[in-house]
Length: 499
Ligand code: NAD
Image: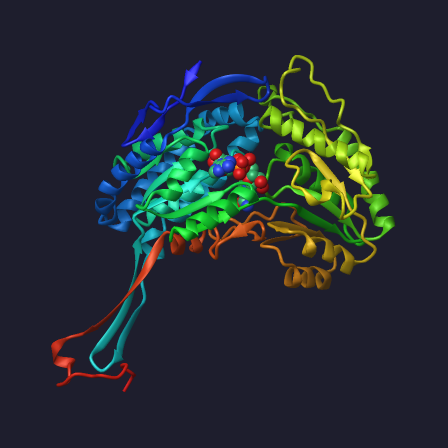
């Protein structure tokens, strides 16, 4: 049994709390490793050592910091296959999908290589008589990231790369479900020349998260995970005076207009609904065809595509469309919700309940499900299922379809499939959701734009990656300067105003 470590001060170190969590290979349902769960004392010690080295990293010029990231990009490419393998083993997603997970993180590292430009301040010459004014972006000190299981490469990289590029030290508390890849990433940063202590990986559960919230040295927390935990961390972190951004769960609707290309819409729904077993915060979980005729045409196209899906372990190669879900508990939760859909009157058009995979009977595989005639009051509509379950809600009109997406408590992503530019534009303008696709089912913005949901999918006022990340991980200082030759005689007692 492999025993995993923390990564502290440039070294893998054993946990000392005596507490461990099991890490599974979800395709086999077998424990493959044990991960240490840090105590408050271990977390505090890691933060103290990060704080000790952070000032010298902040004083390193941004171009040199960027060069470390350039090397990280090279090493990520070098180790792509190894990272994807380790990722699939603990998460269950297919190898091409795992490589995509690394790739989308790597692209944020590439963006952060622009740190020297992105950190430039503003300057106003002669803001007043003999007065110049300038602003600078300075690092916060020590920042922390708490990340979910479903993108164990991409989301840690989204957090650590900008934090480090800005001159902070960074403590990552990754998901305890698939901790191997975050540890490998930390070692890559180390190999790329990052000084010891600037990036620490502290494994753990609620105890480590609470220690992050209570630690007075930590200035900022970036969280991604489920909404109840996002809300908990946001409230407690803000109350402690920290800068906090928390990204939560989702229920993403895809509206299908009568004029849409129905084959394209069906292909898009199958990929976005069932890819990664539906364990993506940008997965489409609700299809909203407009009009019964559109709904009937869509279902007719969807059913054979869904019935053809190949579910299997990542080791079966590229032919597998999606793998197991992450844990036995996740599987049981999906099965419970599917049953509630049946009990509450939705029509189960594709029934994946009896799915079995020979040789993998202990794995956490879930067959694909398609529901039709889902209504607002059903649990499968209200809840984030995070599994291979697509619900169809029939809308009578575009306005009604829009209202489904608008009224839902989550606001991460959404999409519309139509050939009509007017409708598409209206949708993009009016929808109260953070990321919108027009004939694009998973509109995850590229690294140089920002990523973030609205409503209960996001807490805090800045998004992840792109220019917002450089704002989140720095604070602005504004300097007003006048040299003695510009100073007039005497004291001023009223608020200075421009002459
Ligand atoms: P999760 O909320 O269970 O865990 C996320 C992190 O919080 C982990 O590091 C975990 O150790 C920690 N945590 C769990 N329970 C805690 C508790 N009681 N107190 C303190 N910390 C706790 O989420 P998950 O199951 O790992 O990930 C799936 C969720 O993440 C889904 O809801 C998905 O939509 C969401 N997600 C959102 C985005 C986004 O950008 N909005 C991206 C990816 C995933």
